[in-house]
Length: 288
Image (tube, rainbow, N blue to C red; front, top):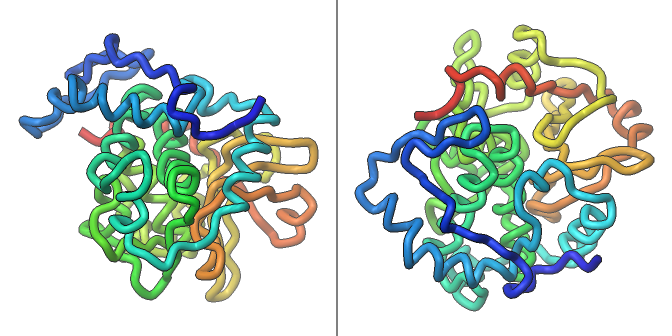
């Protein structure tokens, strides 16, 4: 099976989507304060969905049950993309999406279908941003620790691509995926912003009892290490014989991409896993 963004291969049926208080398994999609919210799920959104068929040919719940063949295809396509030197508007205007606004609607659409405020929704947000951007533009979103915007008003706590200076690093991307997947992000821990640094994230995970060994990870869990002033965090999206497929913002020369991380290398680099099950299943963490 070839995993490519062929617009005619994604069969997204929006007829069944009821965004206002729509039931998603045992979860409820919250109301939006936007007057335009429902309109996004009608004709303009259907038009977007037809263009977006180039992007994802799989539909939920496959976001957390991708085959190894599909994961390998995603990995290869992401690997072939190059880090962008352009703004998001410049990249996206020549893609199927034509604009940043349409791409942001695509992210929101995939999260709603996967399940707003669910593990599936968080994975859908992460893949829609990183892989959706690379497959549709041939570029990777840019990485920066210097120019990222963090904290309660930063990029990690806003929806979609919010401006032309859209940079993320590894830790802000992890929180961006949580927020855009429908969750509140943990803000303060002993005066530190948990969205900002791997050091505060690993302390938060340890103190809340969700930091554990790397084995038995699920899509939507995070792998993290932090030693001294250096650290890194990635999201698991699937497994293969030797390790995990992950989505991450890696470094300035690699940007946002899909990676393979072996168990051997993860152990050698002293990674731990953040088991997100209790966080995802706590209704009080869902963003209203």
